[in-house]
Image (cartoon, rainbow, N blue to C red):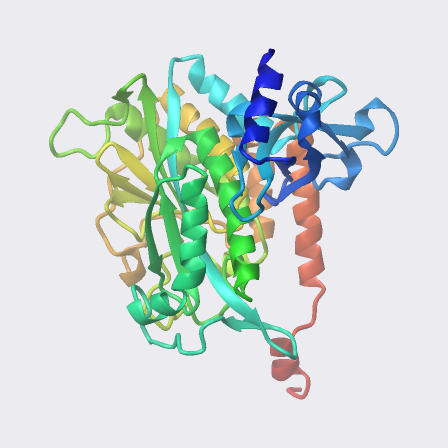
Length: 439
C-alpha cells in the first residue's frame, strides 16, 4: 500500500470523509474548498484547482495555463476539525503552471525560511492573537457581545471572562484537539476583547496554526451567536488588537539569540537581527498593519484605560511594552503586527529585515528604558502615520519588497492603494457633524 493510500485509509478509519483544502489569500484570509477523501492523492500530488484571478493578490490571467491556481496539500498539516465532524483540513501551497507560485503567501514564507535554512538556522515564533467578540446592532454597527463588559480598565476582568467562557472553552478545546498547546486565555484591555496564546513553533507551523485559529474562532462565534473580529481597532476610545510575534533563531537545539553576558537580553547576532527589523520598520509596517483601520491603533490618543499598548516609535528596550521591539532573554517580541496582518507575509518581511541586519552587522542603538507614552519618545523616529505612507515606504525598500517577490509586491501595493483611495473618498458622520453647518 503506497503512502497516499495508507494516509487515506487512516483518515477513513478515523471517520474522515472530506478534505478542506485551505490556503491563504494576500489578505491572510483562509480560503479553500471541500474535496472528497477519495481524491486525497490528487490533492497531494497535483493540488485542488481554483480559478486564479478569483483569488485576491494573484494577478493571474483569466485565460491560458497561468489562469489555474492549484493548492497542493502539505500532508504534515492534515488535521480532523472537531467543529466539522468528518472533515480534515489540509493546508495547500500555491502552484501555477506546474511550478511553485511566487505570489502564494505560504510560498513567500517558504522562500524566506529557505534563506535561513541555507545557514543551518530556523525561526521559532509564538503568535499572540488579540480579538473582539462582538454582536451586530439592528441599525448597523457593532457592540461588544457582553452588555455588562463596561469596566473602565477591563484587562483581566474575570466576570466578563466567565460570561464568555462557553465560547472560549469551545475554541480552546477545539484547538487542543487539533494539537495546539493553548497556554492561556484572558480578557484584554478593551471591552469585548480577548487574547488566546498557544506555544511557539517553527515559523511556518505557527503561521498555519494562526489560520487554523481563525477557522476555529469563526466557527465558535457562529455557534454562540457572536461575531469574531480581527479588526485592529473597532472602537475609537479603546485599545486595538495586536498580534504580537515572539521571535527566536535556532541552530539545532541552540538558541542563537541567547546572550553570554549576564546583563544582556540578546546575543550580538540577536542585536543585529533586531537592528535590521528597526531599520526596515517603515516598510514592514505595510505588512504588519495592512489596513486603513490599522493606523487608528498605531497612534497617540486617549484611551479609557490610559494607554494603547501599540507601538508608535521605532525603538527597542528590555521588557519595554511601549517600544516596537520588546527584548527578553533569548528572544524578542515584535509588537508592530495587528490582528489583520497576514502572518506569512509579515514573517517573510521580518526574516528579510533581520538577515539584512545580520549581514550588515547593524547596531540597534542604545536600548530604550523610557515609557514612550509618557514623553520619552523625542529621540526616536515614528512609524508611518497611515497606510499610504507605509506603502510608500514598502515601495522604497528593496529588501522587504524583494522578500514578497515582484508579483506579490505589485499586487499588494495595488490592492492597498485601492483600499486607501476608497476610504479617502468616503464622507462620514464626523465630517458632516463638524462641517455641514460650520461655515
